Image (tube, rainbow, N blue to C red):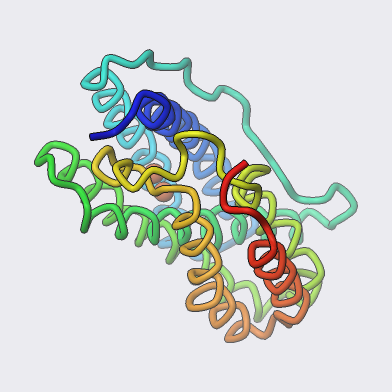
Amino acid sequence: MVDEAARRHADRVWAARHGVETGAALRFGSLSRRMWQAGAPEALVELAAQASRDETRHASRCEDILRGRQAPVPPPETRLLEYAPPELTPEQRLTYEVVAQSCVSETESMATLVTLLDAARDERLRSVIHELARDEVGHARIGWGYLTWARERMDLSFLAALLPVMVGGSAGPDLFRPALPGTDDPGLFHSGVVPHSERQRIYLETLESVVIPGMHEHGVDTGPLRQWMDQRRAELAHAPRDA
Ligand SMILES: [Fe+2]
Ligand SMILES: [Fe+2]
């Protein structure tokens, strides 16, 4: 049984996911066009365009879940959000956005969804989570494929110092703060939501097991990112469990 604060939190998380999916649809559409302009392989350009369509479908699945929970459906994200520092060159900015969206966000989202898949009892919820998880695996691959192509054409070392900010931005402002009331309830798993402390653990573990080895493989120094992770771990070890 999930208490009232946890139930409201689950509504907010599904509403936030709806925003993330609509935003990702816009971002993949833009990345596909920019990859095409940069001369990236057609297969990657097409995969990014397909990812944009997938994200629109994901948003409508989130809408279904919200309706099923009798929670309000928020308006879609209409802004094309970009995170690359403006001082980068255009090709570095494209690379930054591809890495942030694909290699980091999609990889983290996949890890979250796979965890949820094990816990979801409700058949409808389970099938939505399964569909989303399957697609995010492909969306994450776009980034690694792009880096394989890009590293032959440009120096990727600029990414090293930027990874902590990128990864911190993707985590959002609340992830490494103490849990707010209702956000760390284990019952949340059954609503398709990972409790707060488990989210922290999954986020760091996925960086460790997927993002760091992937960056290393593409010749990007992961020292600054590791340092950032050590700081987060030290904070978590000293922080109280609840706000
Ligand atoms: Fe998605
Ligand atoms: Fe995705």
